[in-house]
Length: 246
Length: 289
Image: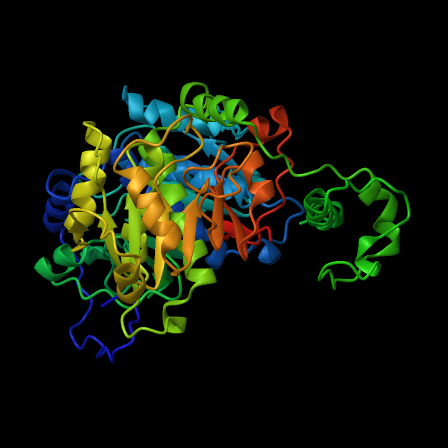
């Protein structure tokens, strides 16, 4: 159960489920086809929750730089569009996001998300500096919304291989959306990037088992029937929050 | 939040009260916080008084302005209806949770009744109902007139699949409603409402008016003229204005007025001079009254 009711609800004794890439895809398909959630609706829900997670992990007061700058790196698929929505909500929460969105899929929905960000006066970088110091100096944190469960490990192409190399050397904290980019969703990547914060969407993936940083779960919206069907055993969500820290 | 913005927030609350009291606050150097009028107990820093004089008032929209803003959000800013409806419905659920915590209900089960109209206001109600379920309430929906559009069909399915029951019609005995539900959410008509109320909503509204259970209205108390209000219309206990309040909200006499729909781009806010007070932290709602 993920809400408090008047009756006594026993704490779930079953452990939290870590999804395989395949299970994650099946759940998403069911949400769209059977539960009739809209694509844009889901991405909005996830992006909004990601922004909330960022404000919990990195409150404005904790930033050392004068401006609350955040670099959001968006990949070409769904993970990237979640990053776009996250950036937009961060702007509303008075952060100063800058987006780097080098490769864009020809998809009206993703284009709309891009326009929404542009119209919120969020700047888009035309290139990512390869001088890591420049990134360290300009931004407080980096949000990795490059690759999610949809990509296959080992199939990264440019410009993402270079971007990931740069990210591995960056000194400022990093938060990854759903899966640290470059990791296989089923297995942690010892050579990959090491984010300080992970925001799992729906349920954590197998690669997150043993993740040592701050781990948030954006899954409150999941219908109970899906939670039961896949034995997700999600923890309780506090108050009216759409996410919980694991 | 900078000092100036904090002061603007302060000033806006003050001038909102002034507008309700019938007079606009314009005099230099007089701070209503000390006039003993209203429950304004916060300290007013003297250094801010001249700033407060130039404070801009929270805008109460005309029907036309509300429609233009809506249109611009979709055409120019490229938001999709389901995107904004999700945020709007969430705001409503959170406002309700703040005003009527489930634990405070006298009845054993935190039952709420959600009345959904034939348009977007009804859609907001469907999203609100789904979030209320996630927050631990037990919503029941009455949705007699459903648009033949995928958006509304999908929202309905999402509710059904969350185990939210749909009543075929509203009981015409107000006592039945009072006995069964702790709160009624009025998501019948919104800011596009004009003209006569068609059935079954005429009967629904007249039943509601005779019920004693508190009512929370989404955006506009249904049946009210969006600008002039309605003296013998619904008298809700809570109003949740979305995006910005409409002129009818000036006539709202209930206990709780919340503002929700925290998605307005700064450029749009500037264009229409909405002068929205700042939302606290990451909250998606704020209490105006």
